[in-house]
Image (tube, each protein chain N blue to C red):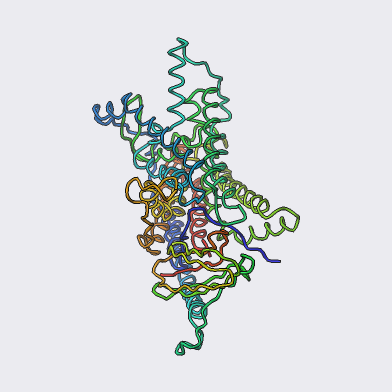
Length: 465
Length: 142
């Protein structure tokens, strides 16, 4: 008996073509050559450990960080969350015609990493849960005359709740959503319900551990978008806006336990999404058939299969990183293994970002056309409203040629690779006083980076094939 | 000095490997694209009968009990080709070609034909809209 895998994205009307073999070869060759030069022609003293912080104009800082501005951003965030939940629960069941799916999974989930890299941590001011939490906290203080008391957050837990949450978000979208047995994807009302439940959970955790504490450690979106903001050069310190050396903030990001798990979860979940209709297709089909023959229903079989493969991705990516770390610890003068494990986690952030660009760039460009035309004019998909006169617009799929998409994909992976190597080399020169040992330790990280980048290229070359 | 020499040798080695890889894969690509071309000619046009319009062999998707017979049909085209296929269905539904956003109704027991230029590159699907049943996946190469 043969099965047809009912795998499909809710929103994807057009899938990318696999990158041609010649481009794969060029990409891989450039990666290898660049890596070789990184080994020989690199600097000997750390350059990114110091942020070289420079405040921006005081007027700009005061205006952007003023209380009314914060309140405005909070209100916008709460409105967008509330509206997405409403649209999810009360709008059309067609995923591509409902505001909620595109807004949450494309505009926010894919757009905010990009904006965070360019403009800094833009999610922090518009974070709806933080805004609600701060308002409730402020009201409590005003009424009770004292600040709300919180439990001490178990520091060992660190960012683990966010790492697991990150996997859960992607699981909801690409495993639970795509496994309906039919090619519908996640239904908008499921997403609305999930967003509502997540809001309750987040507010409860904020009440327990404090708003800012939870945003730093457990709140999935704060941690995830915040991670990408570390790559860029804008930030806030002591209540002032400022500029810093790009990439420098990332060198201090992973000091919280579980940070490595967050960035590994990001790479793993993107890998899984990229591989499920390409590299893993055969394996998924095989496992799926076994489970069906074992008597599970089609939907359950597919969800279980996808869950297994997503977990394997997480373990695989984690294992590659740990092997690299283990290898570095054998180099003379190496710091303790634990320090190495957290100390190089941030070098994977550029890889995670490159994976996002490589896998979702075209989806983002195409789906944002929908977001700003018919999904704005007719957010509930009722076909009776037309707020801005754009309800009947469509997506122009000719906007990007296959070639343009391929070059962006390969370019992103190569640049991510170079930036990752830069951060890793810089960290090594900080950890190993002796330059030669530092360079030797980097053979290991180099292998890790080449593995991730070539795996990324490979995924692109067999995507949707 | 010694380690520098080692590095140069290692570097030359890496570049050599890269070049070999490039040549090997480049050849693969050529044969692969030739394969794709043959696939395209066999699936998208009528093999051997190009000159006689009286015997068109348009790919036909047969729907039985709301499901495509033989699974999802796969077709491959190059940009600029004409995409032609026919759907024979025993259920009434709407056929939706994603990306190209073409919709046609089909009656139970009826058939409907599609004929449109391959103007958008990518991988697309067509489905029975009401049943959310995918019946076709087609690829348009640049």
